[in-house]
Image (tube, rainbow, N blue to C red; front, side, top):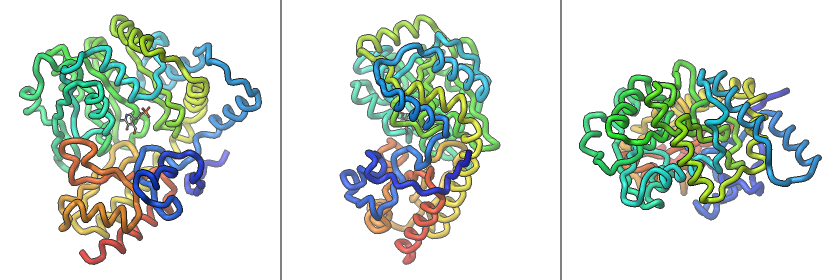
Length: 391
Ligand SMILES: Cc1ncc(COP(=O)(O)O)c(C=O)c1O
């Protein structure tokens, strides 16, 4: 089996959000733009996933999916092998993507007007889900210390009130790639327990952690924390399967599980056919692939850091401990943000995510997806060098 992340695969005209919506979203042609925005990778998944899809196509019948034993077993085995987390199969609930998953949690465990605490800047769908469900978004702004995000514990107490029902935690954190320490996680979870705040832990990036960093599973911190936690995990970021819209809610507390399941039933949610099959194939056979992917992503990230900081004086790239979403601070660049976006997007034709979409504290940042062949990163740096050479 060859795993070749350098290979450029043409994704144009493949119904790819990242490539085929460059025109409608950025007014950029997919023939010349570099899409470094939405979080999927330009890589094929482990071969076992495509083998499974081929055999499903050969069989050819796409009726309703049933018998999820292989799916839940694959998740349990993965959690044990990669995260030392013992999960009972009964704790697992299929969800149609993680964003939908935590939206259902918001609906099940709070009511309109209630507060939902997030640590901003954070993945833009957090704020969107909270607001779309008419809950109050409480943003605790992260602080940068030693080049990394840290939780501002001192200001937390004044932010929450008795109507704050949920903490939506991104662990590891997107953007910025912070892998929270055990001590930080414990402190923030205990803060929630003291105030009867439900912990909703989006751990979708948990497998994309670089050497020297350790991801701590929130629900593993203590039985009391587990009892008050809904965790979300998926193979979608890890193995580039986002289009299957498949994730898992993992809930050990039977009462929480029952209430959550009720919310899913009310919405008529049931599993897709190929999502669980692809997930199981990736978890069961994708470990070698993942272990090759991680150093590749790390090298891409180092290349981007070095390149951006060299060609754009004043730009500072946060060193990722996790994720493939490079987070670049332009506050030290001697240009207004509007002009920086103009040069990056309109002139260099690089589509990236605006930091302002990630909430408070993101205003001076841009996010670049580095999960692509290294040649694309080289090209991006080359273009940026041209556009910022006057600085
Ligand atoms: C933290 C986080 N949660 C959820 C998602 C999206 O998950 P899904 O596509 O399963 O809804 C992303 C995608 O970038 C993400 O970064």
